[in-house]
Length: 76
Image 1 (tube, one colour):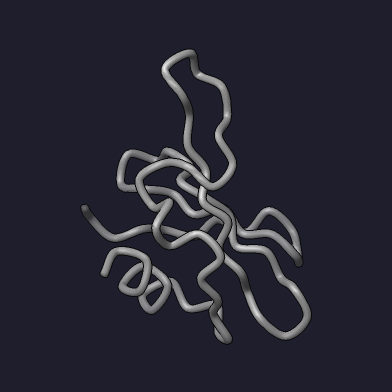
Image 2 (spheres, rainbow, N blue to C red; image 1 turned 90 degrees about the vertical axis):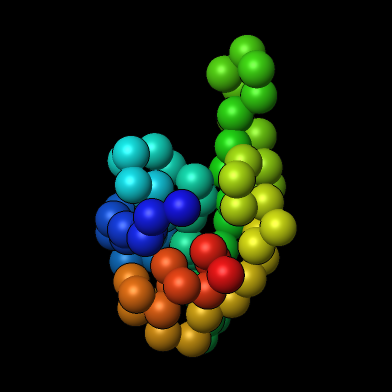
């Protein structure tokens, strides 16, 4: 998988996009850390919280919001 990009929605939420621009999750500011919330879609196109290609990284936390570090950690 190619590197991920981050798109700030607001001060508390950052979208995580794959190389095709599809949202694979969000980073949510919770206290002093950023927590990754994976997102996916089922066969009917319905949103599946905690699902998708990065479901194994759901709830991973980051102390710094750095695109290269977040991408490397989520894709490891």
